[in-house]
Length: 273
Image 1 (cartoon, rainbow, N blue to C red):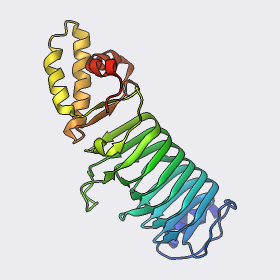
Image 2: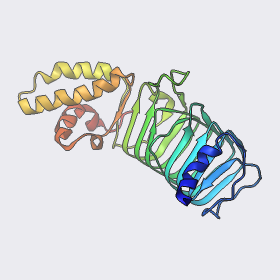
Image 3: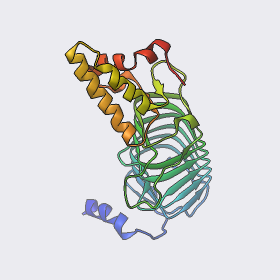
């Protein structure tokens, strides 16, 4: 009975502004009253609210969701979240001048959101697939385990066709499984200055040239593998991401030799910006 009631509460209170006692999250700190938050167990839902200068601190949360809400000057510190949707629903949630510090999270669906002038310090992004998320003047440091930033929007529900990704500093991020898609302008971002990643400014031109060169490869197996990896990167280019940012760690083991052949000139010179 209790479990059924907890499942029903989010539906019963949708679009109503009530302040609910925060069960099992006593460490939550709010500087002001009146935040419309629904907390059931360790779930936090903030819906249709403008949240000003609040501190979310020392929290272990199962599910964190923002629905059509705006956060201004808020701090999210020392948090571990099993699953977070930064912009649930059909409207964009907005984060202005917010700080995410020691923020450990997994996001199965990032949602529709805008981050502007935000700072991410020491984050651990276990998964952060951003298909309808915009970043403007943000600074990142920490670990990106499985992260995707997309410049284009494929869903018809969103009125805008592009995600803005402008003047972001990613120079202190440790990338693992990471990718840019759909035309993110890498010339307008600050990327990590290391030798682990390769940056190709004109991907289509580069791949077309390599396709003409691979016919000279005598090893038939290597040739087939190179054809395969060229097809993988050409798919990304055809989706709009002409600027390629990649690493040998992003390809399967059976294609590593093909990767080394394809990017041999870049590997010799190291990271090219």
